[in-house]
Amino acid sequence: MQKLLKRTSQVQKQAGRRQRIAKSKNASDTRKLQHNQLKVHNQARREVFVSARQAQKEDWFLGPLAPRRDVGEKAETYGTVPLRLVESPEKMDGKWKKWGIREGDRVCVVGKKEREKNKIGVVREVSERSETVKVTGVNMISIATPSYMKTSSQPQPPIQTTEAPLPLSSVRLVTPLTDPTTNTKRDVIVNELTITDTNKRYIANYIDPISQQPHFIPWPAKETPEFQDHDVDTLRIDVEQETWVPTLLRSPMPSGVIDELRNKYSKFRTRHEDNYIEMKEEIDRKAREKEEELKWGGGTPRVMLTPVQELNRQRRMERRGMEENGLTEEVLAGIGEMMARSGKTLPPLKEGEMGERDAVKEERI
Image (cartoon, rainbow, N blue to C red; front, top):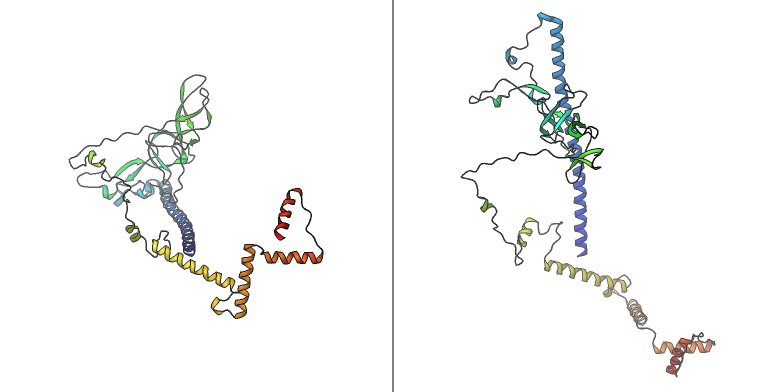
């Protein structure tokens, strides 16, 4: 049985090691894929910008002789940004930073490369996967209406205006703080936020001068959606009704179902039947008995012992029994005679041991 348990433990360790290696390889492949996607995205944006700069330079150089570009397929959509370049690629490694900004917060654009720096707006959408944010009325761009949005029932204009996403690192939260000198509230740009374990946010490295406590910033209130009931909806009383009552008389899942889900002879199996455990324990008992026979038989089975080996084995067993049972009276008498012949006596004892020596002498007499 111990061998079986050892094999199961070894298999679990090997499976865990393979899983860690596969997880590390998947993480590496994910980083490479994300890097390639970002590279392709930036390259496409760069090509659009380069072509726009070349056209602008050509128009300035040629003047009235510059060619018209708002003709043909681009007659209605010339000057728009491709839709594929609006959204930034998502981070696939799952390591997203907690910026502490949600929909409804007021933020200020502080990025050096942003064309609308120092502009304040309300957050309309936050994407944690791509770490971008859309601010109402900030960073507006014109995009061409996709073909799937052009329907006969609802005609759409060829060009639509929308907010382009901004990196979360380019915006800062704006919150009102009370000035202790004038006792008036004014908007302050928060450079760094700290998120607690209880999902609360406060200004880092700042202590409120009045309360002498960190200044916690409340989260924006969420609008409660209004749901409309229909005839086909399931009633709440049916949803909340308990149809299964737990009991100690039967298990939630029969044991046979678990055996069907996991192979009976699986190497990862940790629960075995009683007859199988008894069979393994019987095998272990026989193995121990055989080991004992080999140990006392000089390393060979008992059926193959020679007469000399059998005699030596018997004497060893007798000596082992003597050691366990102590010295016999005959041996003690022989030891006493040998000591008398050699003229040796027992060593002097202490006061408490004198009675024991006298008792031993009386028994010998």
